[in-house]
Length: 148
Image 1 (spheres, one colour):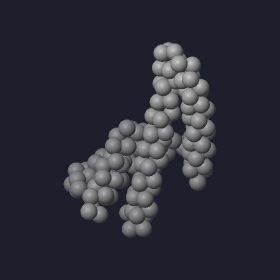
Image 2 (cartoon, rainbow, N blue to C red):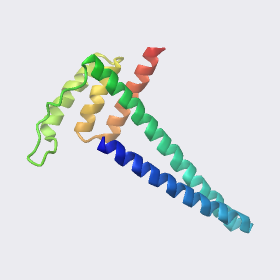
Image 3 (spheres, rainbow, N blue to C red):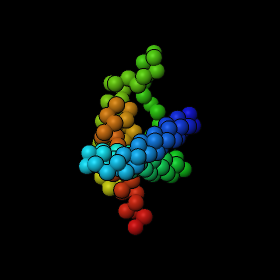
Image 4 (tube, helix red, strand yellow):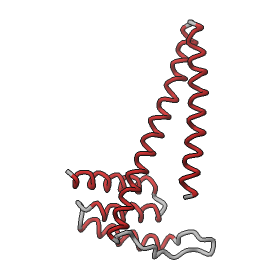
């Protein structure tokens, strides 16, 4: 729950920032010179890109959460079997061993969104965020196509 609160607080702060920056862009345009109009338009485009990215990230997190709830209801969420260091961090060798099992499971069932979800968790535990995100996106896509 703490992570959700932090996310929404940061998203709200980011939206306020986008409004303030957008206001500066609007203020530059009426000066009418090519430079100020160019800067004004550029300053307006940046918040739009930021809002699009924020929307995509929020939608991704929502879809992944929906899959997690569905998998939990089925009893298929991966069990946390990872060894941890005294500081609480995941032991890399342990994460690599779990990752190897999850990868084999996914290779055996490449069209099963559940195995891709578990692989995404294993990638995350192995600290490979880009691949974790791609695997989760694959799970979301497979789940969506399973609904038809």
